Length: 141
Image 1: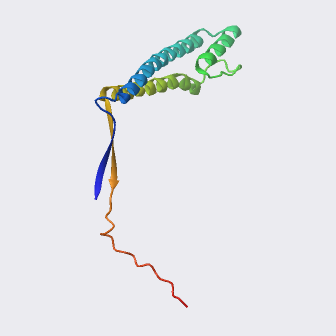
Image 2 (image 1 turned 135 degrees about the horizontal axis):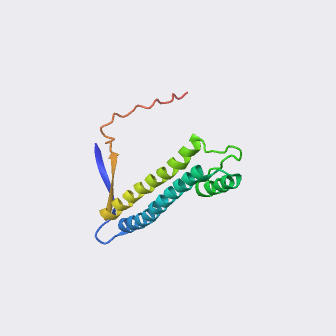
Image 3 (image 1 turned 180 degrees about the vertical axis):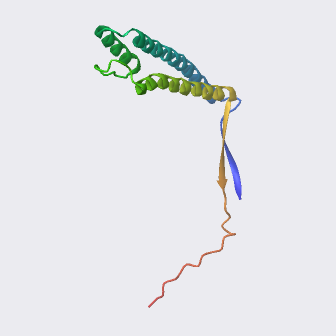
């Protein structure tokens, strides 16, 4: 026999899920906007470095600024950004943005529900229906 046990957090007087959802939603919105700013900042710095890095001083300045914003260190003698480094510069902030977007949706779901019900399935077996196992008895000598 199977039965479903419902774990309920919240209700008419308990507002804990709504409070948790509000905190997650607020923090996720702030981090979403930060991820957007970092994404556009890293793209702008990379574009400027690709367009304007002609002298050794500007190349060194670009290496420092790209390392500061993205954490990617460009080799001193390379002179240009490789395709792998461009993918890291472009795809890292996009993934970060999508992660915080999913966190916004999770916070919104928790905030809107007001109560959280988690269904847990429980299997119950009746021991009377099971055949009793005959344990082997030790022979006495």
